[in-house]
Length: 172
Image (cartoon, rainbow, N blue to C red; front, side):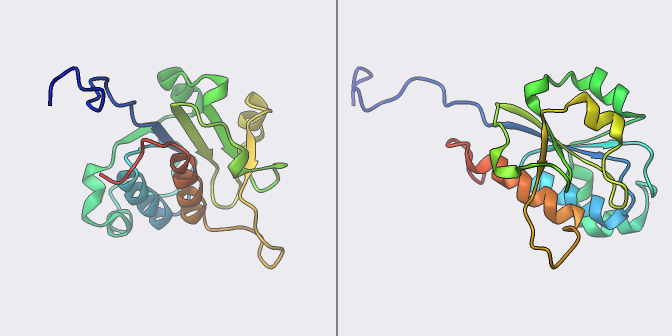
């Protein structure tokens, strides 16, 4: 084939979507380990915002993350202000997940760079964070048979839904 052949594409493929999972004050070590493993599988970064309800050195975190934990793209922030200053997400790049939100997760915007923000297992997201992004609240629909989904399950649903719409994304 000649380079002028129209069936040969010389343009760069579009970049893969950049995804960030942000856990604010996570309390349960095995949830965080599971989320880390999911992030690694989806090529997403994991951000933990203190306070943490466990030590990152705990064997439970490592057990939940299996031998993958050392390869997780992990950042730990002292508080949400430090995270926001360090990563500088635009208002259209942030989705906050709370069970009280009016919009379901499949209505979230899908920019190239996206921060999926989740609160602690028992308290959810602090009101101050919710007020920073009043137009960015979403939930994962569930039946009335339960109060909520497990945090790591919710992260998996939302993260992969955010990638599903990216036509260039696929398993590596």
